[in-house]
Each structure stands twice: as C-alpha cells, then as structure tokens.
Length: 465
Image (cartoon, rainbow, N blue to C red; front, top):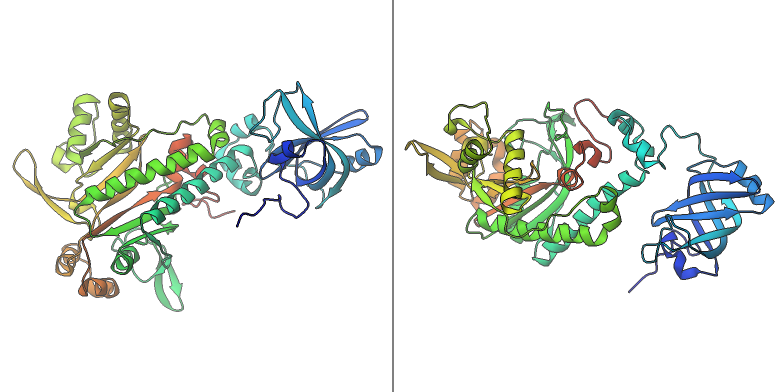
C-alpha cells in the first residue's frame, strides 16, 4: 500500500513538492537557513529534509516575529505558493526549469523551538564550510552535520546500504545481526578493545567473521551491515577505530573467483543506485560514478612487478618475495595505471601470502620465480581510486585443516571451541568479504579524510562528540 509523504505531519507539505501546490495555501515546517530584512519586507530560506524554499514576509505582525528569530530556529510557516517566472536560484524543486521557482507568501509563522543561539559555524555558506579545519568540523559535529555537503555524504551512504541490501536479498542472501561483544578476537587477539563483562574479559568485535561463517551452515548465504572495532594506533586519513562494515558470506563456492564476481555485480548495482537517487548530492562534490565492467585482477606478485617496471615504485622491501602487501603509494600507483590503461578505477589484487591473512584463509600453494615455495592464500583486496575498500577470500571449511592453521599461528584452539563446533558437523566450501562503507564514500566523493564520512568519527584521539 502506498503512503503519502507529508513532510512530518498530516498538514505540512514537503518543500520539494511546492510546484504541485501553486496557487494554494499550504504549511511547511523546517529550519531557518538564512534570513534578511529589506525595509518593510523580509526574506527567509526555510530548509526541510527535502529541500529549501524562500518565504516572503510582508505583514507587520510577521516582521515583528521575524525580529525575534535567528538562523536554525525551527518554525512552522503557512502561506500562498506563488510562481516567480524569470527568477533563478534554489527552489527545492528538482523537476522544473530554473526560469520558474516557487516561493511562499507567508500568512502565519510560528516558532517551534527556542530561538537558536548564534551559530559557531556558518553552515549555510558552503565556501566557508569548506574552509573549516577538520577539528572544527568535528568539534561542532551536531551543527556541521546540518550543512548541505555533510548531509549529502550520509544520504549517499544510506543509499549504498539500501542498495547493498536490495541486491543481496535478490540473490537469496539472508540478513543477520551478530553480537558486537565477544569472548575472543577474530584475528587471534590483535588490535582488540578489551572491556570488563561482569568480571570476565570481553572484547569489541573486530568483525562478524566467525558468526558469518557459522550462519553459512544455517542459511548458505548471509550478509550484515554493522559497526566493527579495531584498536589500531594509526591516525591517518584512511583509518577509523570504529567503522561500518558491509559483509557477506556465501556457501558452496568453487573458489574466491565467485566472490569477486558477486561483488562486481553488487558494486555495479550500488553505484547505479547512487547515481540514480543522489544526483544532486553527487553534483555538490562534482563526483563521477565509476562505470563498472570487468574489474582487472592480478596477483600481489604480479602487481609488485608491474609497479616496479611501469610505475617507478620503490617499496622499502628489497626482495620481491619479502613484499607482503602494497603500501599506500603502491595502491595509488596501481589504480592510476589501470585507470589510464584500461579505464577501470577499480582493481583486484589476489594471492596474498597466507602469513599475512587470518588463520581461516584458504591456503594456495605457489612458487616464486626462483623456485622457492611460498604458501599463498585464496584471498584478495579490491582497490578503488588508490585505496583498499574490500578484503575477502575463500575460507578453510575443513575442521582438521582449520585447527592446524590455528596451531601454526600459536593459537589455543580451546578458545575457539564455539566457532569450531560448526565445522564439526559439516560446513560447505565458503567465503566472503567486507566492504568499508566510509572508505567507499570517501573515494567516491574524493574526501580528504575518511573521518568526514563517519557521523561521529572515533580515532585514537577522539571520543567525542
């Protein structure tokens, strides 16, 4: 059954629909974005969640009320919707010509809150907002989030999440919600936030990994969108200590290639949804949505060779076989290369050494050019415009092999008894991945730091607001 969006009450109308009510008296509710008085007339720009509209106040009693108000005060306005041919500017209407905008000639204005105090930042002026320091943006986060650019970031993230759900639901995945207070670390104890759980040591979950795998034995295909926690010391433009992870896990796979194929189709849908539903938000950042076809892929060893031969990459490690990962510069150079040569802003890097992947990663035996055997893994990263946004791979599904991998890492298998229980009773070949929501938005919008893509970011120096 369809329902009508009423803008917050049965009487008020959304600003985006002003054109539908031309010549009629309506009510809107929202915040005062800006206000100016010119003699015996005043102009207000009122903002609601759908857009902005100019309100004209001419009655003396309304002008007296306006004198008591300030920017960001919430108000209810009643008035006549009028067309103003020949004017240009913001109207909140996305489907009319710039030659015709709609305004409201106010007949009533009622404050809905105390008059707002003077703003610490000018959220209605985009250029001034762009000039704010990161610390100011975050210190005044409850206010700066109201700015046009900040709201756009989180509208886009909301659409990413919605599209993520839409696509996976259509592919017979089941959404799950795993606990975020856990008894042991997914990665074997590294980078954990410890807490006291009624006298017992517990941790904030680094990942829903164990629960995703267990639930593959229940539903075969599962996904989750939720927070994860990493007690890393990094304080960079790419790191957060709490972020939103978009995970899926799927059973009865042949190899990690099925995971990459699924993710390629998933991202194509997610980007297409954002392009369709967030055109105005993307325009604020002059952001271009990538056209996804076949995403190039190459092994880590191949990536290192290419970077050295074609891009002048000089990593700290001397021997190719000692390179365990790409550094940030390597990631940037690699995606730039494929963007210029193949027109792809995304690239898969596969076959990471097993030693740098979690114990549950499916091993893959390989050999270097020198003939020295090195254990690789059926794992991969997805890089987007120079930054890793996804890590995934096939998992070990054989209980004996899983315990052996734990022993090789010096882990006590008894601490993982609950996790191992699922493998005692038959688990299908499976694998999965995790997409970092904030990193995805950062790269799409080319934000200077991932912290701007988090509502209230948590890093090693910030626990407020």
